[in-house]
Structure formats: structure tokens, C-alpha cells
Image (cartoon, rainbow, N blue to C red; front, side, top):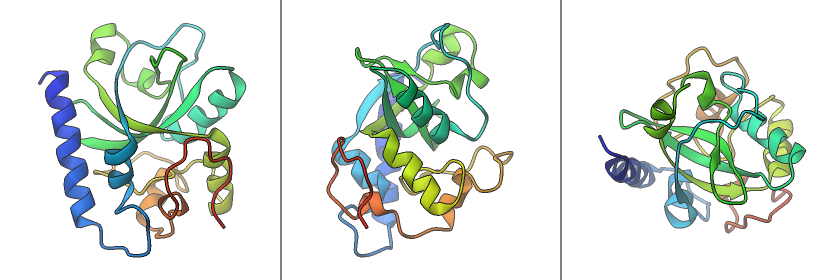
Length: 185
């Protein structure tokens, strides 16, 4: 499957997720709707030598912390696919828009392996991500609702798997703003 078809695959999965959304009282009909309206497409690439591989199941926390530590890196949350499934994920982009994905380095190690991944995500402030995890009382959690199957059953308790059990998603209750630094009350 080529990357262009990966983009089509992502869009189809997001549209299906948006149509299946059953919750009310949100600005967006799921995180899929937010991504379809505001997301950008990205391509996987090898991790720069200056960035250490991430910890399994902690992509949201690791990406947010790295964005705070390194000038110029921006936190992006959305979905990733290799053409088989679409799953929630977080990564960074540098000022040129190049993907920096510490978590992917745990499963890919050659340029060819990295290049088979396609991403669709929206930029958020890392402070927002960490505030939300703290509010939930967990170490790492996505801002968006879970899209796609959980392909990481080894994920530690209290991490992204929590997305299945919550129904608040404050980031979906307000219009998207990539500069928002705190969650709505």
C-alpha cells in the first residue's frame, strides 16, 4: 500500500468514527471530526540521533515533555497508520514540519520502516496534554477520544487505554485553537 492510499485509509476510518459518534454537547463529533477539520498529513521518518526512543504506551507524555524541553518542537496528536489499522498517537514536528516520533523508534529502525507510516494530526500545546493527564490522575492520556483498536495491549494501566472509559473530552467542547494553553473548565 502506498502512502497516498494510507491517507485515504485514514480519512475513511475517521469519517466512519465521526458518523458513529453517539455523544452530545460537543463542538466536534469526536476527535475524528476535529482531525478531519483541522488535521494535517505527515510522513514517518527516522528519529534524529539527538532524540532517544520513547517508552511503550507513553507517546502522549513523552511527546509533551520533549516539546517542553526542546525549543522549536511542537506536539501533535492524532492518528497513525501503516495501512493495516488506525490508532491514536502523539508525536512532534520540528520547525520544518518533519516528524519526530520517539515512540515509533521502538518498532522501526530503518528509513524504509519509518517511511511506511502515515500520520494525520493537529497541533496542541504540550501544557494542555500534561494538564489533562493530571486532571485524570494518570501519567499519560490522549486529549482525543480513542480512534481505532487498541494495538498495544501491554500498555500500562492508567494510560491511553483510559480513553475508552471517559466521556468528557474537554478539548472537544471548545473550538480548536493550537495556542490554547489550558483546558476549558
